[in-house]
Amino acid sequence: MTPLLFIEMTAVVVSALYGILLAARKGMDVMGVFTVAFAVAFGGGTLRDLFLDRNPLFWIGNPHYPVIVFVISLLSGLILGHLRRIRPLLPLPDALGMALFTLTGTAYAADAGTSAFVAVMLGVITGTFGGVLGDLLCNELPSLFIPSPLNATCAFTGAWLYLGLLKIDVPERYALVAGILLIVAFRLAAIRWNWTLPAVREVTGKGPRP
Image (cartoon, rainbow, N blue to C red; front, side, top):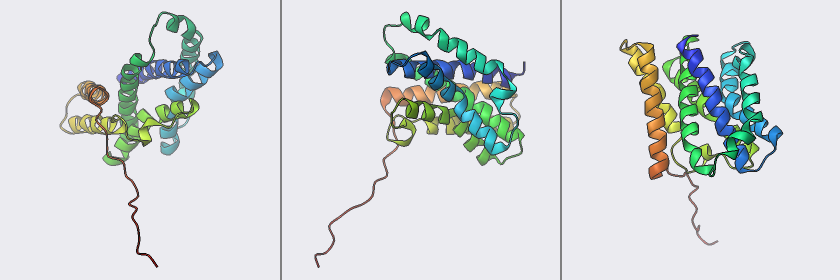
């Protein structure tokens, strides 16, 4: 198994766990848990593959991925039964899954011959869009689109670090590790200290009276 495939499979598992925690917070049944876990694990990578015209989609080409998510979802009741608190567990699988998917997405896009900027953007989509789908399925406004602890910014920064290290001939495995560590640390710090981007609001004012 290549490093990228190992990272991708790990990302699927971690993201599925994050999706399970999201669904459990809403009190969903096993079907709901599997649906949310599936969307979080495969949403971003599916969109990336569609943009890059990669066939088959990554989870269809690796049919054990959906099976892994299905089994984890079936065991979710057992897993969650040993957890007293759900919310405090969300940041770590969220950050790790985003980091792993961001870098695999960036690598696949770069291998497809895209420019560095497009590769980074597709990496960010891979790393964050699954979470957007998970929030929507849980009837929540996606945190990616509102003032909240930095999310896509962390993925964007880590993807550039990965490509920059490759540019100066750092071995890929070290570039991947560096990118993952930066994204995870950046994301957890953003949550811890509530680092956000400013909201863009329409400027309104009273006009002259007629």
